[in-house]
Image (cartoon, rainbow, N blue to C red; front, side, top):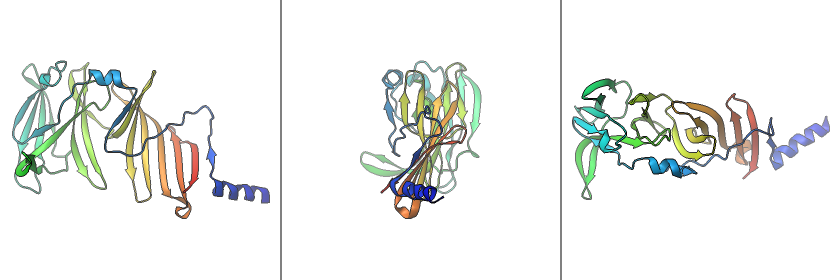
Length: 251
């Protein structure tokens, strides 16, 4: 019994690493960053159009073929602005194909972030209520997807609609993940995402990207306050929620 207790003390002091399955891949999670990074994705990135985000401040129709000739759609953003404090600006948008509206997305119950009030022009800030529509390749298929800021609390969350090249329309992404790194391997693409944070810990998730879905693959928790702030605690879990590795690292 004493030997078991001594082993426990040594583990706490010098750090401990465990793995339930030696063949399990332990991912190298990147630290949080505001900038998305890529590894081994040059071929896909070369096919992806380069485009600036859209800034909407009135009823607007965007010819998406001017951004990407492969996308035969128009997007109509419907602008409603009443005041600084309650107006989200773009209250809905329509997807138009062959001059016919094929879908209309109501944003009033989805977006909780008011329209921005000021915009920079020629080095000066001027009053012009507007909404930013993000253009990004969320699922790394070389087609640009569209997103908006859903709301902000401890951090800001975006909501996205990804472009489906088979159905030729934009479809809601329900994962609401925040990518920080894409890793393109021979047999799969992994996206590392920032999930949540509190005062002493942060959580990251990794997914395998499929054509129209994400497969949860692994999670990583970084705890900076473990054992009275003397150790960093790293916890890795697989898709089943099983702990596959634990590290305690002296500060």
